[in-house]
Amino acid sequence: MIPLRLMLREEYRLHTSYSSTRMFLAMPMFVFMISFVTALTLRNLQGTVDLEDLMLGLNSGVCLYGMSVGALGFIARTYVERRQGKYNYMVAMPALLPMSYRATFTGMYIRDIVFYMALVLGPACLGLAAAAVAVHYRWSAVLSVSIVLMLSFLLGIALSFFVSVIGSRSRTALFILIGAMISVLIGFGVLGLYGMESFMPSIGLQMALPPFGSDLGAAGYYLAASISSILLMSVLAVLCVPDTIEGGVKRRSLRQDILPSYLRRFAFARSYRPLLAKEAVDLLRSGTVGKISFTFIVPLTFLSFTTWYVNNGLNVPVGFNLVFYASMVGFFGVMLYSWLTNMDNVDYYETLPVSPSRLIRTKLIMFILLTTGISTAFVVALAFINDETRLLWLALPVLYVTSAYMVVAMSYLTGLHPNSYLFDPGVLLRFALISLVPQVGLTILSFSVDRSLGAAAIAIAAVLGTLIVITLAMNHRLDRRWSVNGL
Image (tube, rainbow, N blue to C red; front, side):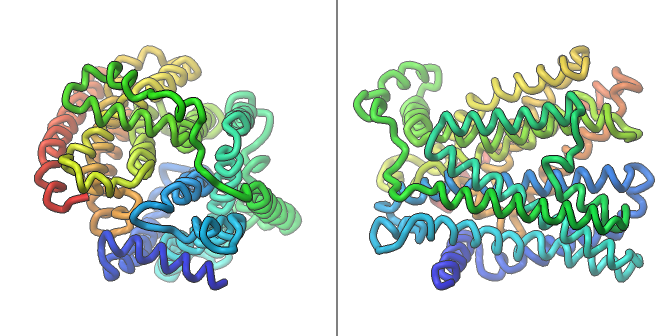
């Protein structure tokens, strides 16, 4: 318990160092208010979307959120590799003290569960409970929804923890696990061999409890399946933590001087060429490409099959077409920026003639180089799966503009520390407004594409034009915003 308490204090100090104690503690209140207001309007929303479909999407989103924050095998290894830097982390203490990496990895895993439960899921459930008093929701339904959401989050974070630990030990095993996950999604979304409750038992639990049902036998079965899955993946992940961690650098990349080859490849970048070449070498030697595969490609694949399932398997009155999906891919791309900024400490740049804004732009260029091909391939593949190739001419500009807009907005607001600054409610609120307003607008316009393609295309073009102007303005102001604040 003492290491866990110290890790919680370490995480608290890390985040408050980028904002303040007051702003950090305001985060739960912010989540509470969002949940409260959303729950108050839930009855009106049911007129458009069926409650069962809504809960399916909500639990899927919470599970994805757990997957996005649970890649502890990758993150902890990165912290260990930085133990000789300016800062040291408790997870790296076995290199200095008579402790085991299994103990510190377990502490980090429990720390993140406590951290996100206290800051996000707990306040969200309390907001739902507070709204239930005003609009008279059944308390049994509120309790079941809260329990299921927490189980969905735990399933996501446990899966991510397990896959990341295995992937940090073997890249082959990582791709095998990712392939298995994609196969499961294909069996569910494309082939329709089973329901979502087969691989996400928390969904089955929700359907067996109020407000959807009262089958205690089925509820007990899915509850046991959920808890067993979480415990199994957690225990296996802990058992697979290696006894020693020395960093995942390939011997071949150590022996060879690969920087000159990347300097030649990035000749088009002119003054950014040295920084981009170094970024590419860091990506190769740190194994971040595999981490990107898990935290970017897998959620996109899950979203692809979920979109296909909603369009073909559910009775939803509004169809999600290729334009909607393209805008969502642009939104998911922001996760990759957080990995690029978390790949290495930037403190050593303090002694070099490199400004923070220049570093940020380097990572933006690398983001574009990494995501453009992957995102395009996903959108084109979905166009063929859903027989919507006729919309590619409109979907691809939506993809490219929203991707650039979202990542520039993220970099403008959070700089080189997105994982910490987003816990500042002020920054989070601004990011929510900047991202959700155009996202909602594009979503609404995408629904009208099949009814009036010409009018929808003109309106979407106007939105994209506005986003381009805002993106260029934020990029222009990066120097003024971050050159004073420093790294």
